Length: 320
Image (tube, rainbow, N blue to C red; front, side, top):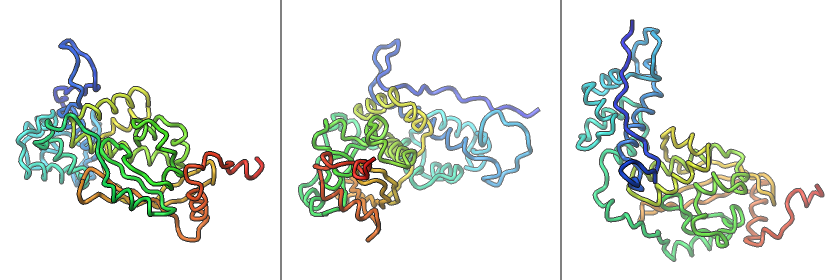
């Protein structure tokens, strides 16, 4: 009979803000639990055939590779890898992390996330106050000059820090919203109007959760991030499902399909650029293919700007 893999001692994945016998929990994400679950989920997605190992057809009690198989691929002992998967990531050498990344077939974004989880930045404790990020006035002026091109700057925790008139016409009049609601995670999981804009909502939601995951890897001691994750976990079953997958990736460009209540369907390309003077701020722009129906719809929408709410919907213009 095939030997069964024994589970590693459990690392509790505390819900942020939970209260235990010892009193209120630290309102931050549990770095050990994050590392443990990330490695476990990456290992679970691999099959022996994926890494050139024989699969003798025995029924596996756990999905994916066993820990001893992964340790063999990485060239480390089973005990060493098991300890790492239990969340003990301190003092792990870069060489070993590189070997484990190769064995797990991690992407560049996933490898960077693993490094963040095992090698925390030394300045994190100093930043627990988490002052709101600021956008340079010149960057705001640049966005304002991008006539007809929706643009915004997103920062930590998916906060929308700045935007232009075309962006407000496309996604909502952010200036009239509470600051805490100008957040892509809250918008995409808790705001039905914004949810309805995205025909590929699952893709957009997955991108947002991936961004939050990477932020959590860099800043697990951020209480505002922990509070946000806790709120979304309570209020959205979809968020809980996606958050539990521990997926991380970088997506600097692509296409989004939207259905706007005023102008109908739009196919828009987006570009996301990391700012050179602040690695935690990103400028995102949307544009349509020239002379396409989407370009005309976007031009019309941008011309209305924040007055778009007073315009008739596409159905009303068609007498529906």
